[in-house]
Length: 377
Image 1: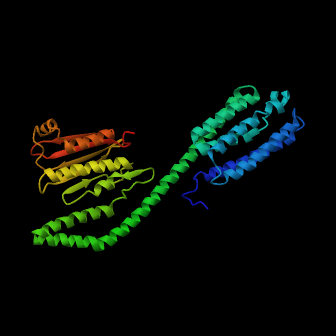
Image 2 (image 1 turned 30 degrees about the vertical axis):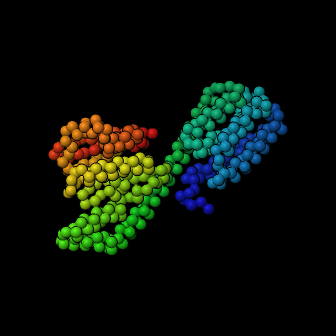
Image 3 (image 1 turned 60 degrees about the vertical axis):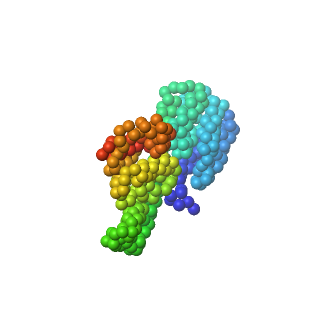
């Protein structure tokens, strides 16, 4: 049995289509039986309504099951409905046409576009409504005001039902994501409590004692402090792995780079990007921070700022080191040595973004990396 999260959220609409199809076929059968002596070819009228009944049974059984709603079946539904409608000129008499009698399919023909709307969304419902509306005009051999009115009703109903089906599915996906996030948060909080009572307390004690002793113990204290910050970030942020649709949270990934000398500031909510784009931005940030460690001197601090601007993200990496002296980059370019600078700029260019370096002696170095949230795709 399907669970609420795996079942098609539009299942209630499918059940409505099944019920409506049975009711409209019953109505069509009653009309044919009541007017069977008035038709030009009564035997053909009974044959068509019999085919309608058989298709009602087959399609209803299919639509009632989760696995019985393939795209081809819904398309066949609309095509068969229109084909049966087009038999009307061989069944109805001239008098019936003059009296604007219903076509042989009557209101049964309106169910196909509704099924298409549920399966394909609003656009599919409107297209199917137009197909049946054109079939109606051909069957009546006239595109008059009545046919136009029927077409508007068919398209409007397909549009509304399609929108309802799309909304149901998107709402169910949002609920599923919320439930997964809630479960992950609960597990993370449980781990955080457990780690806080053991590992974090030990690391904090090692850091305090190492700073008190100084010497080689101070270096151990520094390492313990960095691991304490990294571990706290790990248990206090959203999972940073790839999620549904190949996305990953850049906010969580960057927060794991925090150390005693690196401070990370990010939005309160997740910043979900394509997983590959997230990996590239993290790699760029690591390169910039590695450059700070190599060239900014011992004791230099760095700050990473993540901004979500809607259509693009901005990552700024700033340090309080000595900066880059005037002309140094020009000399490096002349000697063919650009290293990290061109590596970062090259990565961003491949992603359709930009990387701007701002530095001067005495005021540190800052990278500002901008990239579209779709990775330039």
